[in-house]
Amino acid sequence: MNGIETRPPLAVDARTEALLFSQARTANTFTEEPVSDAQLAAIYDLVKWGPTSANVQPLRILFVRSAAAKARLLPHLWEGNRAKTQAAPVTAVLAADTNFHEWLGLTFPHRPELRDHFEQNPELRADQARFNATLQAGYLLIAVRAAGLAAGPMGGFDRDTLDQDLFPDGRWRSILVVNIGRPGPDAWQDRLPRLSYEEAVRHDLETVAAA
Picture 1 (cartoon, rainbow, N blue to C red):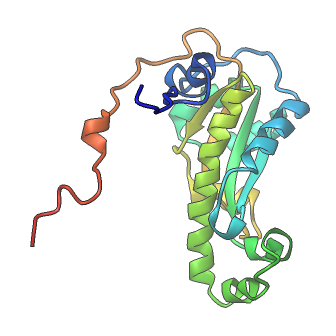
Picture 2: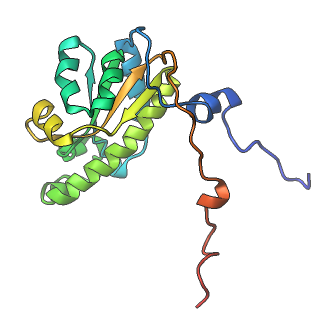
Picture 3: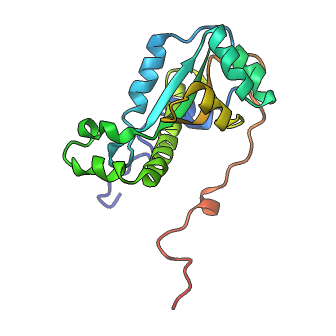
């Protein structure tokens, strides 16, 4: 092979690739099998390792499991999302902590001035909170799959009323609601097409017109 070592393009095996990506689906029904606290902790313990800008880690999670808590959450969801949320063993309300900078002494200790920089720039802080928490939300979906569970992410809810009810101090701001559990009967809708590599990728500046 001309002295060149050939390796497979992925470092994970086919089963892991299928579990996390190619065969994983968004679940719309769930069984009654509970999701344990240990599973939820294991999921977060994967999420926390995903990269964020300046290690800010703004994702905050409210796990909703009890009947009383579900009854409080459901009115904030769009009607089409309520039944499946009611049936899910646990629902995660994902939020961005707009005061994430208070933790920077722990998470980014070599740049102590960064805390004051964010303190003085609330708009920048809010933007960074939402951007990086959204990154972490993606990590959470993969972590749920790594736990052998299915995730049902939903953007269909009233953020303003949910935040006023569940996060009244204004510090946490919701970004996504995710049902978590074992997939139930008819859990999957037909998979929609994905763009190909050729349709989504450019190399270098090959498509930029010459000056």
